[in-house]
Length: 356
Image (cartoon, rainbow, N blue to C red; front, side, top):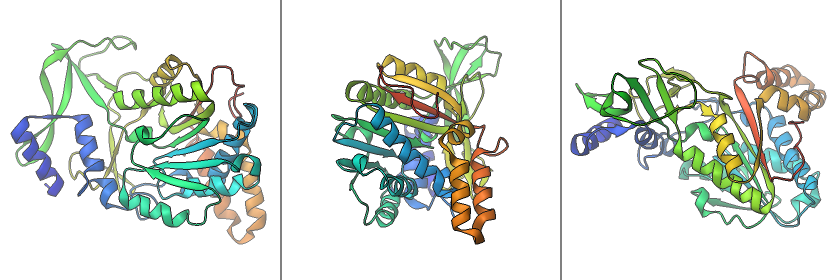
C-alpha cells in the first residue's frame, strides 16, 4: 500500500467500508496526496492528454462557438465564460485568442475557472497571464454568481465526478464498496440490497449499474442557470448516449491503464459519462439539451479540418504533426467516436452550431 491507501485503510478500519464515490474523491482530491493535488496530471509528462493539448484548433473553435451562440441570443452585454476543470489553462488560452476576432463578445466578458487543485491553478495563472479579459478562480461551481448569460465549457470534467456502483445479486441491487483486507484495498458488496429501478432492461446476476448524483446535480444547476439567464453550455467527454449495464470506472497512470485500487493518488480515476442521464436532468431544469453526438461530427461541422489546413500552411515544418493532431481529434479509431458532445441552451434559443 502507498501512503494514501494506508490512510484510506485506517478510515475503513474505524468507520467501515466506503463507497466507490468516496474512494474516487479521496484518490483524486485528497489535499495532501490526491492525484490532482500532487501531480502534473495533463500532458506528455502526466497521466493523459486532453483535446486542447493535442491541437490549438480545438479551443479556438470552442471559443468561436460561444460567440456564435451569444449572437444567436441577441448579444447581451455582460456575460460569464466558465471553464470547468481547466487543466493547464490551454483551453481557456486558445478560446480567448480566437475571441480576439470577436471584440464585441470579448468586451464585457468575465472568465471564471473552476479549479479544485492549487497546483493546477498556479499553472493556469502562468499560462493566462496577460489575458485580454478579467479572470478569476473559484474552487466550486457553487462559488459562481449565475445572474447573467452563462457560457459553460466542461471538457473532460464530468468523467471525474464520483459515481456509485450497484451489483445485481440474488438479494437484488447491492452497492459496491471499497474495503481493506490482507494489506490491500479491495472491492466488496454491501450485505443489504437497495431498491433501484434502472430504466434499461433486465439485469443479469453480476450486472453493474452506475449513477452519478454529483454529475446529475451539476448538470441540472447549469441547465437552470442557462434557462433563466441565457447563454450556452458544452459537455465534451467520453461516454455513452444510451448506457446499459457495466463497470466503466478506470484508472490511468502514465498513459496506461492501472488497477484503480492499487495506488490511489498516483493514477487518474474516472468513469464513462451517462449522457442520457444528463440530458434528462437538463431538460428537467427548463433548458434544452442537443446531442450527444460524436466529437468528430461536431468538430468537422465547426471547420476543424479547414483550420488545420490553415495552421499547416502557416507552419509548413510542422504540417505533418498538425495533420496528425486533427486526425486524433476526429478519427473514428481515436477520439472522434468515443468522445461525445452535448449542448445546453435556453428553451427558445436556436439550435447551436454543430448540432443542426
